[in-house]
Structure formats: C-alpha cells, structure tokens
Image (cartoon, rainbow, N blue to C red; front, side):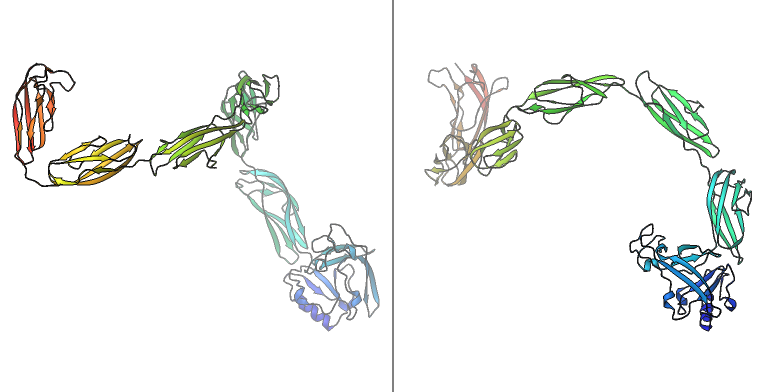
Length: 627
C-alpha cells in the first residue's frame, strides 16, 4: 500500500527523528535490492507510540493494504510459561510481500515459537511478548533471526565501549593493551587522552604507553564519528599499579617450644628489608618477638608483621559437668583441657571420662613442648545438714520480728509453706524447715517466743501532808523481772515493793519500769504531798566514835533534822576520801570504801547540807576514831 495516507504517516514519523536517519517509501514502489525494510502492518499506526528519535540510518518503509487483518504479525508463541529455551510447539507463519500494481512478490517464513519476549527469553503473556521481531536477510535463501525491540523503533544506534584492558601504569611508567567495541554506522575511530602515546589511535585495538604526567588515576577516551558527523565517546580509567600488599607466611607454628625455629617468607613486593636488617625474602627465627618486613615495588612500599611467641608445657585443667560430691548411683563427666593428648589415672586416653566412685582423679596432658597434669577430688555426697540461724533474739518483745535463715541444703520448704531460704516471723511458735539436695532431705526447728511483760502498782496513800511516807505495792508480772522505780522527787529504787518518804510538798509522778529478756513495760501514778509547817533544820556531827564491836558507839551516826539534802565527806590525814554520807541518819562503821578497817586516829570532815526550811549548813571539823 502506498498512497497519501502512508505518505502522511511517513512524514509524521520523520518529524520525530533527531539523528541523521530517515524513513523513505520505495520510489515508484520499487525496493532497491539489499535494502533495510521496515514493514508496518496497518495504516492506522499510532505515530505517537512509535518514536524514531535516535534513528541514524535510512530505512525503507512499506505498509500493508487496509482490510488485510490476516497478515498481521503474530507476536507471541504458544507457551505461557517463561523459560530460557522455547517451550511452545512449533507454529510457523509465512510472510508474502506483494506489490499489487506489478504483482511482484517475495515469500519468507518464521516460527513464532522462536520469537523472544521483552526479557530476551521465551514465552509469557502477550504484553511480555510485545516488540517481538523477525529479521530476514537478503539475498536468499531466506534466513531469519529473532530479536525484541520492545516498544522502540528498530534501528542500530551508534555505541562505543572499552571491552578489554591488559597491563597497568604506575607513576608515569607502564603500558596497557586496550580493545574497544563500536556498533552502528561510523566512519572513523579515535583513542585520545593522557600524557602518553597510543600505538594506533584509530584502531579498535591499541597499546597505551604511559607518559611522565600519568600520576594517579589516568582517564582516556574512546570515540566513534558517526555517518551524520556526530561523535560518541566513552571515558575509561586506565588500570594502575599500587604499593605492594606485603604478607608474611610462616612454614610452621608461630608458637615455638624451646630450641625450635620457624622460617618466615615475605611476598607481594619486589624487594624486602626485615626489622633485623635482612634483605632476603625469607628469614629463620627462633626467638620470640614481633618481626616486621617492608616490601618495595615501583609504586611504593608496604609492610607486614608477625608475632612469634614462646610455648610452654601444657597448662592442664579438669572441668566437671556437675557436682563432684556424688550421691549413691550418680556419676560426673570430667573433661581435660590445655593439651593435645591426655592420659588419666584410670588409664583412659580420651579427653573426657565419666566417674561414679569417690577418689582423686589425675590426668596428664601432653603437647609438643612437654607434659602437665591436674587432679580433682570426687567425694561421696550426703543428705543435707540443715540448720537455722536467727538474725537476733528469738524471744521477741510485742511488735518485734526476727528473720530465720536456713542453710546446708539446695532448696527449702518451711512449716509456713514458704520456699525461700529466709523467712521473717513475729508470732510465737515452733518453726521448722525441710532442706533438700541431690542426695536427700534434712530438717531443723527452732522456737520463737513473745515475752509478756505487764507493769502495775498500787499505793497505800496518794495524798497527804509532808513528810508523807508511801508504801508501793508492785502488781507487775512476771514477778522475777527487773524493777526500776523513779519517785519523781529525785528518789529511786530497784526493790520489788519499796517504801518512800516525800519530805516536801508538790505533785510527783511515779514511774515503774519492768524489764524482762530485753523487753520493757512501764506504769505510772501521781503522789500529791500537801504543805505543812516545816520545823527548823539542824545537823550535828559527833567528834569521836569507837568501832570496836562492843555494841557501844560503834558507828559515827549523822544527826540531821528537817534536811532536804546532806553531803558529808570524811578524809584521812593524807587528804584521801575514806567515807561519804549522803542522807540524814546515815552512819559510818569505820571501814574504807574497800571494806578495810580504818586505823585509829584523827579524820577530817566537810559537810554541806540544805534544810527543808531553806537553810544552808556548811560545817568542817575533825573526828577521832578509837578502837
């Protein structure tokens, strides 16, 4: 088909071309022999969906006559599954190209099972097979190849690339053999760049010899000049050498036993210098330490180091996989470590042994440098020996508590159903615990008491005139507890039921403190002493007494009337205090504080006293002691 419609379509398509290519309908309906022909199977072609922007050669374009739908290109094969090789059955299609005015025709056949999909493989959906193309060669016999241009117009673009490089350059020296590749229509090739020279700058293959300025990364270009005059270039960075990557390889272990040696060999460079000034590639060492080597090539130098250590005889250890105290019927696995081979005291030579009897197990380990040994004691386990420790007294005062801690086992159950090692209690009772270990159970008990203490007292009189004598009756419990009385006027007592005389008027608070096993209780009451006429106070100190045991004048008795406070100090002739009287009617029996009889002689006294009438008395004098 060739008419105004096809001419317009051709013009619309040529308007998209930006390269030097062109679409031409056959002049006079005659296609020149050997021409590249593009066949369009419909005059309703969508020019917007078929861009020829990059077309760089001339194609003859022909159109199928309208209404001939059976001739449309079958662009998918018979297989739905995508595979690397054709999977559908063979399905041939025959193309007959006829020019109607002259009835001139040509015929070609293709197998649509061989059409490739958009992935370059075979099969798939219709969309995945879009762009499938059958390309026929001329002259015959007809040969067909199968490609897939996708949604692009079929043309051969001008492409260049560097596909092969051998050799390297380093600091202005060296050479690289280069091979380029170019596709599409081009009229010439050009290698350029760098400060060196190309052996053949206009050939696909050339050799580049480095120049003095080729230091670091050197970038060259490979270019192709197209038939339209456009130049397409690709940049390529020449392979370059680098400073050597030096390594040290020992010919044996780097941990040496005494007297052994190892040979160290350096590689990766052209020349070497070791830390010991050797310049050979290999050295032999027998002393522990760090050995380093510097290797040099045309691009620089690199270094490496290796540590040589001194080995000793094995440090053998034994590790059990469980407790070493075995209950009857139990066993434990012992594993030796720290050597290469082992010999146990049981004559076994494996790394691990299993034992079930108590005793001392020994293992000897051997390595290249000698032997070493270790031992472990296996004992016979027993039932737990459970005990209970208290954090404080187990006799508790009301409101107090104590923590009980069990020991001697692995797990515990208390009579309170608690399962921790420690419990805290505040109630009286007997607390027991059962302890369990791998060999059985054991028990312990302890008693916790709560002390009951109560303080109370009564008096025969609570109000009266001074001097007022009060009899206190103690009703506290228990009766054997410690008693402490504070009468409120400065007086005190530890008697169970004391009698106390109040000499001056006032209201006095009496406090009784009862103590039992560290617990205390108190009771209090008040005594009211009324005022009365106070007689004149007086005090008299006798000047002689005879403590000879005859019943007459055996004690020096202080005679005090209406006294609130009395303090009589008696000294020997050396100024040493030998006796002290601190209340009225108190007496001295002629003995020292140590209970020894004072010797006969003269003693001196100092008296300070205060009467109930407020009068102060200060006396000094001497006392004669006769036996």
